[in-house]
Image 1 (tube, rainbow, N blue to C red):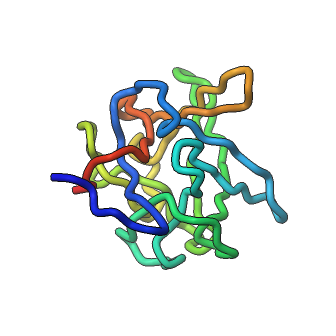
Image 2 (image 1 turned 90 degrees about the vertical axis):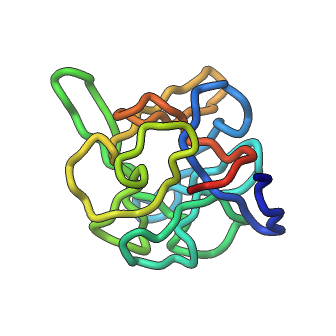
Length: 153
């Protein structure tokens, strides 16, 4: 099933690491400790749909907006076994986290925001290259956040 063509944005999902621009991100520090996260392949930003604060609101990449739905608190979580991991809290929804839908670990698992629950479905590893490009990998599945073609479940 082809992805619907949207003029302003695309779904995000987890997908096997392939190191394509659809899995490349750049973090830009904004005011007050928040980051804007650019998907290089789409030239669009990680976005909570309509800056909603409700549980299960989808996360996508979207054209740049002056919106709290595109600002993220990047929270380091230190673990003895894996070192530093991160959680992403949207400015529009304090207490929520970027989360793999239903803790999914399969290709094309979609992303949403969900209350902080201290699980690996909300933990992310950042793999940085020398040119400032970052891949965001799910700690639970090892899959990358991808904005390429495909339908989010």
